[in-house]
Image 1 (cartoon, rainbow, N blue to C red):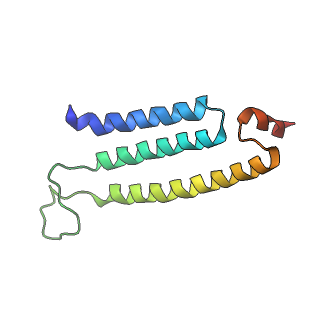
Image 2 (cartoon, rainbow, N blue to C red):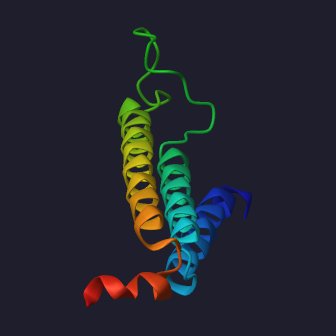
Length: 114
């Protein structure tokens, strides 16, 4: 049961983040939902690469059956960097939208279609 706890927490984070992106009308809250989804994916990646009693891959004489795969850590770090860049870009878009329309609400910004 406890072995599945990180996967359950990752799933809950992803579900809450998707719900925030779909149900909220404020652009900032939508980005917060996207950040929750990214955190859930990162937790899922780290939980996938976990080995009980695992050894860091920097030791060359370690037995290979207890060695942790470094690919998962590299993917998680890459995902963190991409998530920060995406969040910064989206926040800059929201700043421009707020300056132009005076609101970060989706219903007020629908004038973009007209």
